[in-house]
Length: 146
Image 1: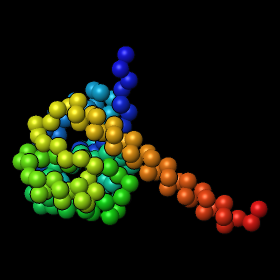
Image 2: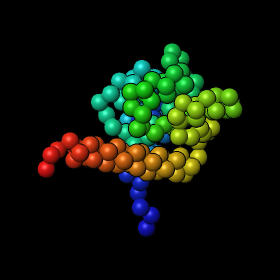
Image 3: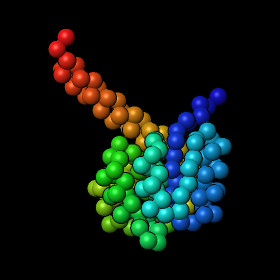
Image 4: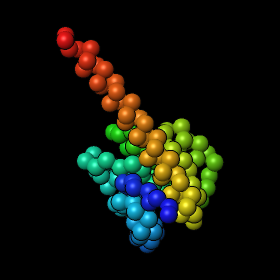
């Protein structure tokens, strides 16, 4: 029996039908999914929630995906972000990866590919968080005079 992926994911896309469909498909596979329809809402969510991955649309009105990516990475560099686009553009993909996107996928999305990318993102984030905690523990130990 295949093990379900347990991960907390934020989906960010201005297309509500797409969000509903993808949220349902991921939810039936064991993921805890939250959705928002704008970059501004995504920034609010990452302030008080921990996500293993964010799936972020590139083309959104208002704050686009690239700007949202930049601001999320400034606030929470440990969160892994997978960019989605309906209009693949190599330049945008390269820019997103330079800013810190984990991956760049094209719509329509293959759910199995997305699940694999979310799994990879969760694993990578766990390693980053673990290293951060190890550094904090070492710093505490060095500061004590036991």
